[in-house]
Length: 274
Image (cartoon, rainbow, N blue to C red; front, side, top):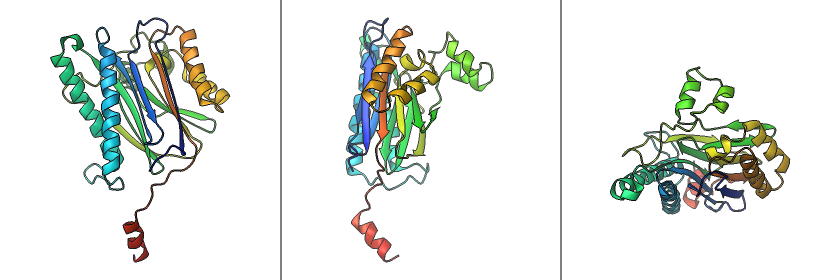
């Protein structure tokens, strides 16, 4: 089921004011309900290769499997929806491709990437992430971070050694504890949450979240919410005004209407006689 009339998707990425080239890659497709953002790292342009491979692989695999699989079937072993399994497996595949490339192409040695992805289906969204790229949700007057960073700093916060305010000012905030392409296998964190009409989901790289505090991100969304393109431009401008020390990427999906999955004819007939 296409969601292009149910979701409004806008994305923007910027090199920032310090880096020579952009190692972030984004892809947003309202029709398939898929948003992917990756923040690459590595040697000269190798981070760009890693993030590009991640996004290309995930988008390609998710689209292929969404078209040919029974998406209403769940996974008995994990309790996850079929769409969550599809997204998780696509990220695992991306990890293997990046890892193999890094170990066979000398110019790509040591490369890796974070990833955060959202897949909308049947009034729900699957959120998957590895690393410190984030996903936020805005609903009514509330703004909350849905993902927790896979980073050394987040572990220190979880142990009570840093407060959230101290973490915002910390110098070691970019040390990630998980990334695609670093090891042969990677643990992907998966969440499934219900979606309501009117909600806004925002994916971003740490080039935004490190430069702009959550309160200012929320204020910008609230102020310019009538035009998502303006929201994206203003957020990137804020990050650059605050130093622009990294590449900056933002990818948003506004839920325009509910999107229940269509019920197949065989299922309708079964319900008639049940």
